[in-house]
Image 1: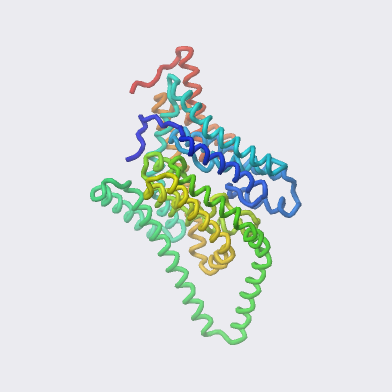
Image 2 (image 1 turned 90 degrees about the vertical axis):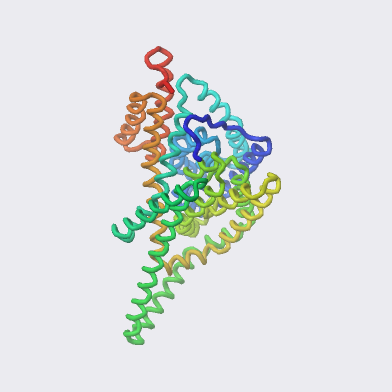
Length: 463
């Protein structure tokens, strides 16, 4: 069951939950200060110049701030207010900026802890203030949940269509719809989209592996008919390419391996945060965690991770900086710990240990993952298509949900405000990133509607 749009999401934390957020933010800021990890995938490549002394700390922090600000205020804050749980854009992006700006480690830790305190205490105050307004735009924001959860289900269809053609894409679409109908009628307690998404991802990986195996067989046939000289030349070319890759990425991989302990601790803290019940690792999982469906949240983030493994691995090897949540497998570890262990101290301890182990293994095997991806080009390409499909489906879902929120809080005028602000943002060259523009427009539109209500020009929508 999905969080109803008529329910008010309460952003409140137990004392131990608040303490965990503050500790995790302080440690994450320390990691960012050492340029060991950032959350923003687009920011990671810029860290190489800072690590190698070709860029200053302030210049790097300025770039990262420009890349992240729209996601913090346009996506992270609205999602937290509408779901009642924290998310990576609100937690990780600010602390990595704080960590990069701070000239001293102690200041980075203090700044990270301060941001954690703002998340713990400030969000609840902001939520109470917003929901007490005559026109409650925070509750209206919950309208985003339905299109996000249902359209996110279809990202494998988009990825398969782009990579393998329309026929296979339509077959996958039909298969997912069939699974949705079956799930709705047989497994009524499960969210139908979660199983359908799993089927789509399995089909995508099956198509990719089949294509790579076919390409290998064709290559073997060509080599079988080639001369001994041609085979030797090809072997030498492959060896030279592998040596060049090791020379280029080897020092960065060594840097991360030398820091496997602090990175492992970070992974443990992130997994513990996911186990606390107040954190969702993505747009869809934030609503699933808010609804208490941790098993489905684990499945969604586990499947989503496969689209980001190649990107995170290659950018980490190229920059010498890892991702705050690694390959993001620490998220489902946390959700499942919460699901299967009732006592929160034990759940946090198990999540921390498993998360630390998983993150450490990821760091130690980073070079091996990079080499493996070179041997499976279709799988690597599938990951690119998965990322683009996720972005495309979520962009549409968030836009549709934002318009629904506009309708809920202001009727036709609400749609005009939200849709108009979105279109103006497009016409201005997207000063707010497209995915965050819709929720940001809901907040701005909600404030405008309350100001109009103050002068008796509009009234709250009945019901």
